[in-house]
Amino acid sequence: MKWLKLLALAITCTIVSQSFATSFFNDVAFVLITQNHHPLHVKVSNETKEALKISLASANVKHPKVFDLIFDWPVHGGWSIFKLFPRIKKLVPLTKWFVFLPETSQVDLKELENVFSNYPHGNSIFLGRALEDSEFKYVDVETGFAMSSRHLKDLIEGQMEHQKLKLYRIVTKFVS
Image 1 (spheres, rainbow, N blue to C red):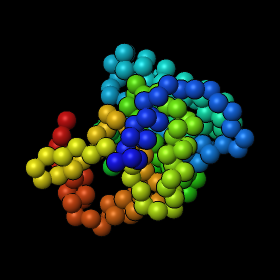
Image 2 (cartoon, helix red, strand yellow):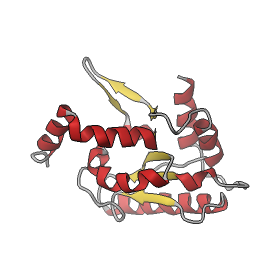
Image 3 (tube, one colour):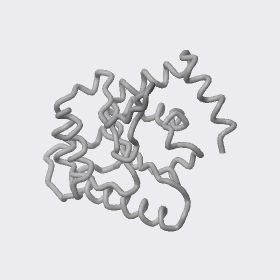
């Protein structure tokens, strides 16, 4: 549970300009899980994206990997993550961590780096909060979550073989 508190703290803290000698964040991709194309959501998402890019620039990241589901990856149902796999797959070799954030997030990069330093990115790791019902655990998207590139690679490869995920892909065709 300690990692959950640390991740929540890192994601909900305000963006702070900090000086980094070498940037850990050259190997981190951020995905803003934007709700929809309503003007308010677009405005908030753009503000969050720009603030994050400014913060990453102050952390010596020359080419920040910050994506949103409105302009960069406009995929209907992208919040489900599975629909983003074709785009994420291209980034896996260039990225150690993927951070998925609600559009209203603020990130303390130093805290986030501290959290990630506790976990080897070469392992299949998911960091986030789980919600539960009587049968399943699922991701609380509103709190943000992170996955190692190894974990995403395993999920992407498993998607081709895992019958439940194949069924999920088929079912989503009928969901509006």
